[in-house]
Length: 344
Image 1: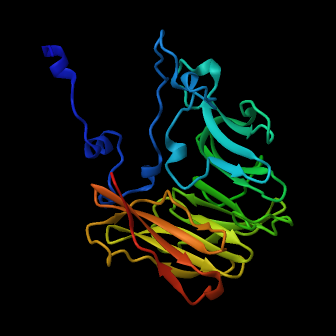
Image 2 (image 1 turned 90 degrees about the horizontal axis):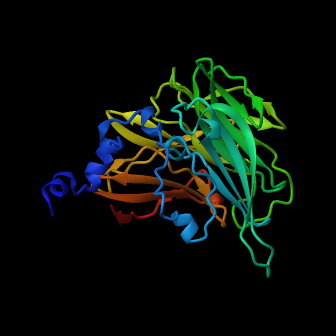
Image 3 (image 1 turned 30 degrees about the vertical axis):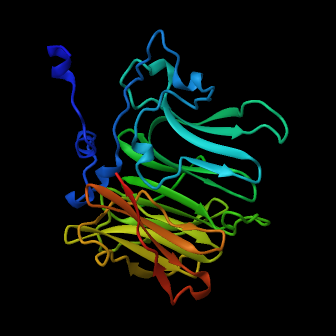
């Protein structure tokens, strides 16, 4: 090893890597900026080397992503329609004419439909692309209507210094001056169940980053109900995520209390008209653990039980704590499952 090699080689540990990419641990009082990600530079390609996707005969959806921001929160960017054997993925990429320029304001929000070959047939999946919006796309979220097979898209677009909330091509009227963190879900059967009727309603959530208020509203045939403020007093990091089944809703907020992040569940059995609140206390597990800002969202399992996973870390190890609520004892009982630990 020569002197030049010794001067440029360095072992980077996980803790150092987190500091390099700006992902502070949960104990450092995270803010909304935690979810803003990092810009992705243009990919460097070796002239005489084949790409990994070419070697493995994989199909790349895009090689022009502009930021990691779209993967930092609970927002969904890829989902599966098992009944129709179709995968949906949404991406934001630089337009081809601007690959060489550092102009993040000129991007495309693209919805990709990835369909598999029919049973017994061979061949690579077919990818169809549809441009949904163009401009400065800040954040987005997709949701599947299991009955119709259609995918709804909620996104934030920056225009003339303002952030505008869109849902399926319609601008959403809102009192939020700086909307962000869109989240959308239908009231429909969970995984493993077939939807035989159209969803009776859906829910749209978002946050005003200027005022800190988090909003939730019902959507029925592209008609929006009045905004409900979920945090009239509490300071929330990030937005709201939720799962919906019939008239029942479980939502998650991350509340800042005494410099610590405390997950709070909002539980409703009347189509999100009223909520009970339940704070998740992790102090009884390991005192050194702190909550990681919520990139996990509540889900409904095949048995129609609600789960609210929370990721915790002490800076060296990460673990998952899952709270589940049984439908048959909806308003009276909840339980916590043990920690399942993964060494970082």
